Image 1 (cartoon, rainbow, N blue to C red):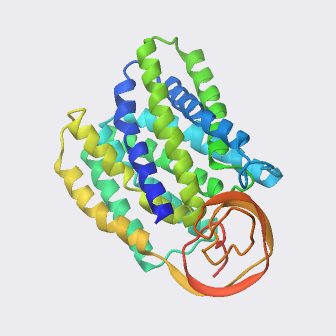
Image 2 (image 1 turned 30 degrees about the horizontal axis):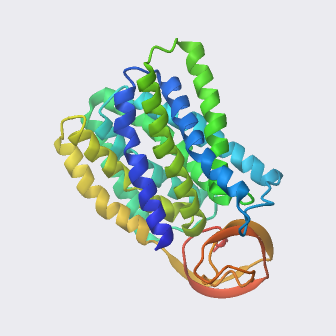
Length: 346
């Protein structure tokens, strides 16, 4: 339940970013806004990282990235921090924020399909049914907007594909805490996109508008990402994304209620189709005998999950913490989702 709650809170924060970004696009160009959002994410995570470094609890020190994890982090920064936000904001310029919010379900679809095709995850019949339903709902929303809607949907789909790569790469990273990886992503991606934005056009936004963009970034791209990373380590990218897929509904509701956008029949029908589709995607899990090889890594964990039998002072079975630890070889069978301990061929 802990990981599900983190994923849900992450979804609420991220969902609110779409209508907020739509409102800010009048004053800021897409590259400028994307940069400020991720600079805000970095600023929001900076105090958390400082507290981690001052802490002397389990896992507070000696966290290092090897070359493989550094490469994964670089890929997550490129896809999730640099490319994804700009594509999404370009889509927002073409159509309603409510439509784009609902189209963000394609991130879950892309994450699931990449999980099967590239990252060796399992997707059962219900999962495939969920993918099909989400694609059909997205097609309804895109078609209702005419050619501008189709163009916007294409850009949003490209953004979702970028975030799907980000989701999987991030879920595989160990050796660094979620707050630190979010800080790196926000600082690097924010600096890159903001620099590009200032080269392409002068900054005409007021200090209040710049501050609002930073605040949205701190909550929706900072706290939200850090919470999602913790959930993904526990649930696996596909299942964490299934919970995170509630974000489009949050964004759509805020777009219709706060921005006053028109609620069309396509939005209603698509939403009704998305609910069972996402439920089916989330319900997909499996059980089979599997072997865990010996491994030494770092990630958020508890000692009552059947995979962490090491001991150290001050950590009870239900206390979640993160530190470098070693796993002995283990063979067992239990129902599971793809997560940091279950990425095996079937």
